[in-house]
Length: 269
Image 1 (cartoon, rainbow, N blue to C red):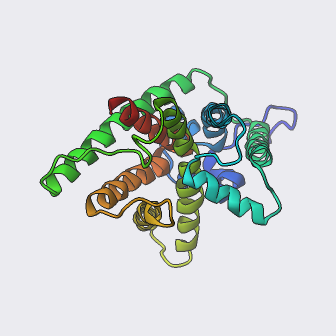
Image 2 (image 1 turned 60 degrees about the vertical axis):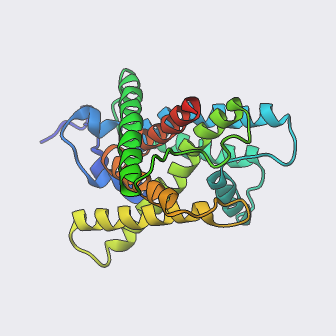
């Protein structure tokens, strides 16, 4: 018989209802404590929060409060969606994002999720390795596939200053991963549960569909890129790689990988 006064053991992310509902990455269960903890929403929130703060502050400083601001498309899309729910303006949207993240962190800490500050440095190094490795591999593959030297460029590369492009790089890591990985891929995995009984197949299909959507949206609207098969293929493969990183390593690692990759591209121009 257990002692009711003894401390409760920590709840595994795979048995955490919040993780199960919002984080498709929680369905893959690595054995290492580092791998398990750092893919949770709590660690992801704390890891990505500095990117969000620097991005929003950077955009405000660069535009000096102007109404027409150049922002990441996923940022504008997410804020448009929240606008239909009555949440308008950058400040209020940011407050909602921060409040939701803080609420999840509070809930998971009550479930005795261990806190290991030293893991955040390892997460950054891991993300940097992924950012360099997948960028080089995908760019090399696309160059060989189309028999031409092709380098990835930011959508607004050459039109803005380097500082602005670096700020946008951080925003892409936060908002594109939030929208296309944490929300889209998790939703696809949830929908596929009603159609496919094999978990691995669900993840593969969700990753492929999510990557196709991720690549396609870059060419929609007046501000969309001019469509080329090279750029579409590159974005599809990068989206597929980031989907894989998200499902295996969680939102935080995927977001930082994306942000650092865009930073590397900007600085290498």
